[in-house]
Image 1 (cartoon, rainbow, N blue to C red):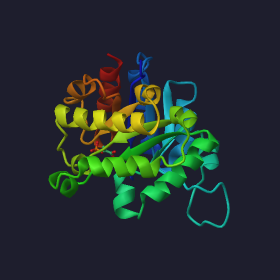
Image 2: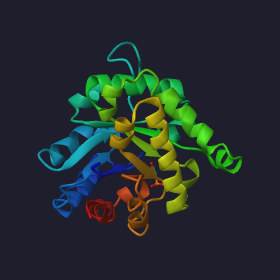
Image 3: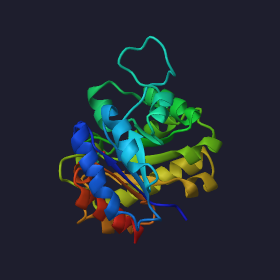
Length: 252
Ligand code: PEP
């Protein structure tokens, strides 16, 4: 049985006071969600503050990115061990906004993923096709390439530290959600790729989250599908009541 995951990507929102207010609002609303891996991903500068607030709770802390080196002359970067030091247990890698605006490639995603897992972080490994790619019928080729490239050299024994997030780029922040059928089809494909690259056991155990305009109104249909194990959520994670509603829907 795969434990569902609900992860909130706060993107470039929330000052420290706002982040603390948000997480303090979330905590009392999700205490009953014992069967959900709950994750929040604020900006780097507030990780430490949020970490103090969630200490001892059922909410886990994630960063939104990391570099692959542990330390060195890499101005502006942050390493997996620094994220651990700030209280993180998770890190998002390969988000489409990083691929689109910051030059992230399958190769850099791969280096970051390996470094983060080696340091002891769980990776929310993001993949997904653009609208053009979907419309030209290359969705599965893109997913195949992103999975093979991003996970190259990752041994099966490390897959327990990886959670795949399927996020069709055309559904992120647009209000357009993939239909339950479209999402399930992509998730089943992803699970099949993991099976082909690794094993049936690895594929069965892998959590595959859906991301793209997930809201309390559409989570139930998505999460009822056999290959959808939760959600990576942007907009709806920025309010305590909507994020908690998603967590509590996953608990059911
Ligand atoms: C995301 O940022 O990963 C995301 C899915 O955003 P939204 O829920 O706002 O589409």
